Image (cartoon, rainbow, N blue to C red; front, side):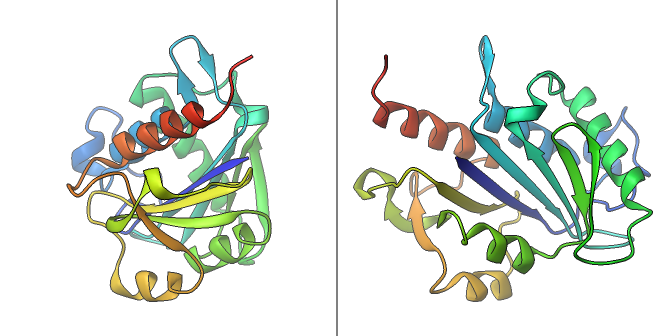
Length: 202
């Protein structure tokens, strides 16, 4: 299993944005849509061994944790940003009913929402996967030996806040795909392609 966790500090936690202007009305939910596409989609296929968490911390009711499970979601995620944004909107609408932080609701097969925090999701993930923090200053990914179950944390276009980086110290190994700042979607694609190259083909 490959798990990707992205925190978006300003992305709206209410479905009050316009599908006709995702960058300007949503706190950059378009970044998350592209990230999901790079995480799951192949040219003529879908990655079933992937889990993705979107941690939304923007207004008006943070946090919101949206979980995508590839094993069940493969028929519902499409390449265009608009349809992906509709899935996120549907999740946020369902999430209005949640009051308890630990409660998770299934929106559609393979799509879940809760009020879990970034820390909650990380603690849950490290119980079953080795955790890596993707950052320009990390150890080159080519030097890392990866186990079967891996998880990757990264920030959106603004990066992770300092308090989150401090929380990850001692929990996640910092690794890098390069010394430049790349788009989150490009980083996810690179990691997937790199891990694919380590797996013997049938």
